[in-house]
Amino acid sequence: MTSSIFEQWLRKWDRTLMIENRKIALVLNNCTAHPKIFLQNIELVFLPPNVTSLVQPSDQGRIRTLKHNYRRMVVRKLLAKN
Image 1 (cartoon, rainbow, N blue to C red):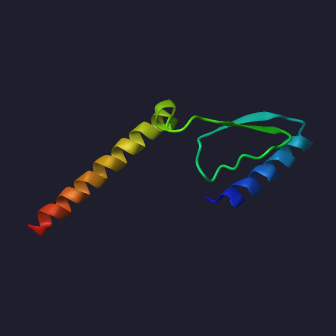
Image 2: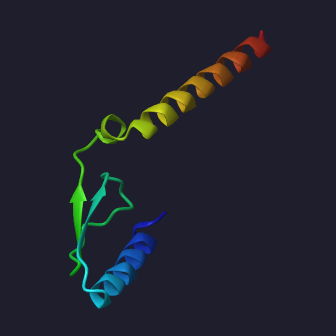
Image 3: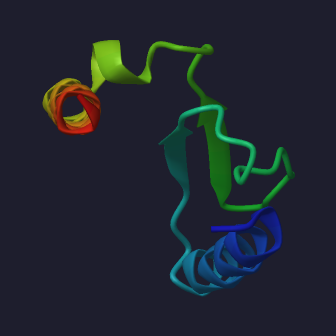
């Protein structure tokens, strides 16, 4: 995801919401692909840095699994070299 693709998608969605006469708040983490732009019908609410895994339980499991698998792969490679 790039910031330009995300911004284009947001602007298109904002136009759709304007036609439907709806307003929303979109909660985002502070990823660099999330631009800080002003939209008419979407208010972007950014989470503070490094709290995504604390407030999104599904991320906790994914991060833990990724770290576990990575460490296991590193250990296997080290053992294979000996």
